[in-house]
Image 1 (spheres, rainbow, N blue to C red):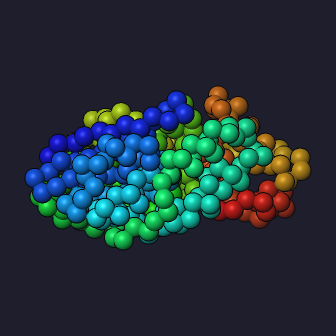
Image 2: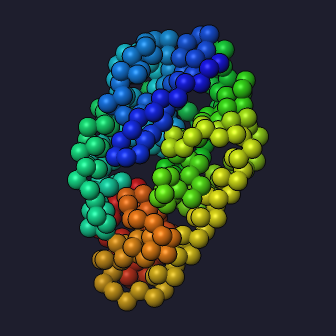
Image 3: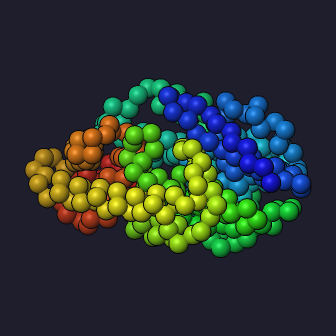
Length: 292
């Protein structure tokens, strides 16, 4: 089996997807951005399958295009709304935070042009399931946290692990990790520390030796715990209007971490606020925000 990395640049960064060449046909893992469609033309047929690591916009730009050409799309049902409701998708990840950080206009333009068409994956997958795809046996490893339907794929024949955005460490491209459920995220990282693999392929990092998997997962756990402490410390000293709490909390966390605010850390801070309870100021902060 040969692993081909397909890289899609956008907004000064990039997203990866992968094509596994096997004797029985192509296995695609994620489909990148809609503008990169030409790279997938040779795989747009009934002999190929598409495995989705999760439903976020920059990983699904060609899902609908490939599905219409006979490619069976596998995905975890936990992320179905991301594939089928792009208006909600934008609001959940970016639009609802427009007053909480400086949201660049190019983010909206890029989202709309690159997410592709709405669709519904036809093949549901579950944790522990082994997909027999021609001469490959690919195990599904559920890793919720980044999103409810995030999964990793382990190719049993080679020991290659494809993690999507699940394995974030301390964040991608100098940012901070994005997760919608901190407890599930930490449990998923604990699960990854117990795996023995040969090579790790991530959607926003260079491939890494399997020996680095445990360290990267442990970094993710430590960072999550640190960010939770920072949010709790901020809330404990907060005296401002509750409806502005999220934006101010995001700014405080980013200052402490030496990072710039963005949609990802807004999701993370919102997650920690939701998990902290029903104090009046937190309730006010959450009233105008939808769950991710």
